[in-house]
Each structure stands twice: as C-alpha cells, then as structure tokens.
Amino acid sequence: MTRDEAYRKAEEKIEKARQSGAKKLDLSGMRLTELPGSLGRLTQLQSLNLSGNQLTALPEWLGRLTQLQSLDLSGNRLTALPEWLGQLTQLQSLVLSENRLTALPEPLGRLTQLQSLDLSGNRLTALPEWLGQLTQLQSLSLSSNQLTALPESLGQLKELRELRVRHDRLAGLPPGIGQLTRLTLLWLGHNLLTTLPAEIKELGKLEQLDLDHNRLTTVPPQVWQLTQLRLLDLEAIELTVLPSEIGQLTELEALRLEENELTALPAEIGQLDRIISLSVQGNPLPAEILRLAEADKLIEYLRGP
Image (tube, rainbow, N blue to C red; front, side, top):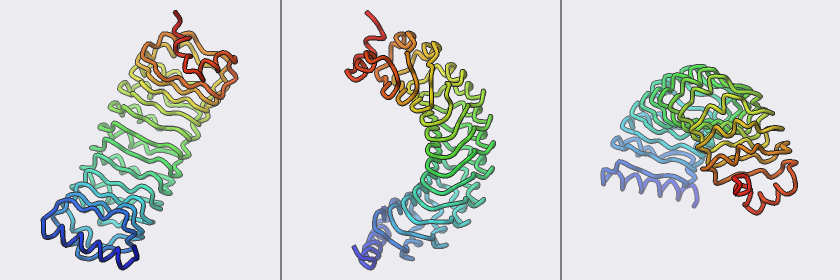
C-alpha cells in the first residue's frame, strides 16, 4: 500500500466511523506517516489503535479526543510525547511500546485513571518520580529500555498487579517495592541485579518471579518466604547451590534452573507436589540427572517411590 493509498484508506475508515458513531477505531498497520485531520472530529471515540504505523509526531488536535479510554501508539517512530497527552484524563490503557522515547513529559502524571501502561522497547534511561501519581495502575511494562534504577515513588502504586522490567540495566531495586503487596507477577530477567531488597518478602501474593540472567550467584533468602510462588525462573544467575529452603515453596509449578553451576539438587524438590516443570539443562550435574531431565523423568525421580 502506497503512502497516498494508506492515507485515503484511513480517511475512509474515519468517515465510516463518523457516520456510524463508532466508539472504536483501528488504524493499525497502515504505515501512516501522518494522520488525517478528520480524525480530530471523532470526539466520541473511546478506543483508538494507531499501532504499527510510521508516525514521528502526534498532531495537537488529537488532544480533542478526551473520551478516549484506550490508546495504542506502539510500533511507531515517536521520539517524544506532547504535553497535551495529559489532557486525555479518561485513559485507562496507554500503549507506547516499540518507539524511540527517551523521556516522559510531566503532564502524563495527570492520567490518574490509567490501569495499564506499556513503555517497553523504548530508550528510557530513567523514570520520573511523578510515576507514583498513577495510583490506579495494575499493569506496568518497562522492559527493553536502558533503565539503571526505578524511582522510589514506585511504592505508591499500591494497585499494581504486574510489573515487567526485563532486558534493562537495573543494578538494584528500591525498598519501596515491598509496598506493592498486590503484585502477582514480577519479571526482572536480563538485568544486573546482585541482590534483592529485604522488603521483597512483603510481596505475599506473588505468583511469578523471573530473575533469569542476573548476577545473583545465590538466591536471596527472602525469596523462600514467597510461598504463593507458582513460577520461579533462576536461569543463568551463576547459581552454585540450591538450598533446601526450596521445599518451602509448596505452590511451585515451574522451576527454571538452566545454565547455572549446580552440581547437585536438594531432595526437598521432591516435596513440591504441584511441580510439573523442572528445567536443569546446562548445569554440571551428574549425567544420570541430566538424562532424566531430557526424558522428562526427573520430577518423578525426585519425588521417589
């Protein structure tokens, strides 16, 4: 589809939405480099999908769509966000992944109805403290940026259920993360973590903890207090010993231990009645253990007769 054809097709969709009074409009994947001005007249829209285009900037008139509850701008070429985006105070979902953003404007802190915010795949090196104003957030995705730290205000997001910060450069976590007591998912893989704050033990509802490809060498003891865990990913963290405390995670269903330096497995793994997936490849374990793992017989072996 040529540029002119895409633009014309978008205008047709906009006109159809205007005539029908549609509250949802999908202009994704059209390779648009600019948006038709007629879009600014669809003030009834509640959902707008502009993903997969080639937008480098957003027109100011887009700020008239104040009824929007969902806005998807992923997969474009945005290097900055306009301050008027903070006028869309009804937004509950904002997807900005796979752009070229290096900073976030302060007016975004007015989007206090946001429940889901996806900033993954950008070029962010730091996050503003006003992020803590988005107190209704339930899902926050920050993966594949260049973040070295998370703001202390993160602890104010008391409704947060899912936090994804994979493939960044985190060297540590703020103690305030212990205040996110509703978290069920915490993905921290592919960072530079050497330890976890003691406050992590307060995340009593956590079901998924992903720590793979960090520099931990040992599992922080507070992890064994997260007794609701169903998935624990410890792949490639330079682990030499898995302690017997693993037996405390009685709800565990999946345990990933690949590419570490383990020479033995604790018998307590056999006490984990719910476990259905155990990955140990890439460790200097006894050959028989590795053969059992390849044959999917390892869990049965560890549970014994």
